[in-house]
Image (tube, rainbow, N blue to C red; front, top):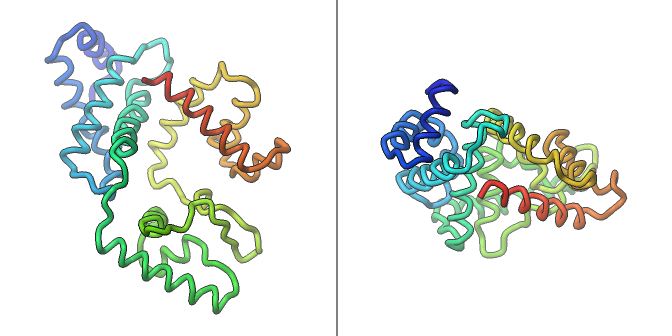
Length: 240
């Protein structure tokens, strides 16, 4: 990886049309691009295509980066790379689901039915993951692959009887990238209205669920969900 001074110098050259500078930045940062695209390998897109999409997001990061942002370029580039891939997935409709994933979904549903019958409550994501020796994210992906998927906002209980939404129970498998995103996010929310800033801080810096935030703000979980989506859309516009 290049040092900060060299990186910023190459970025300035690249912005002025220096193709060699762009090529050098992509080559030197290919480990960063690959680390981001790994999380999308189960989405039905070939690795080479993912790398091309990631590189496109990386080039957009070069064009939009400014040292005055107060963050390292790599920190700024990560959500840009990820955003380009997510945009492609969104714009190209439903991702093809493999036969093995569909079969896994059937097996998981049978396990859930048997578990509820025996324990009179729904199993947590980590229990399902342990049963099938897969990650939490893979469980949700498989469950969401059927034509009638279980919603990520399905309430599931734990041993204490407390209920949470499935989406709030998935652990982030890439803590380093999560922290990088947080650093960028923190610098972007400074100018937000007080309520919007509070929602983002509670959600992404204090790991509060939408249900907990709703209770604290005195509104419904649905309202928090809608507000969060609108805030994130506004923040994304700043990166494009």
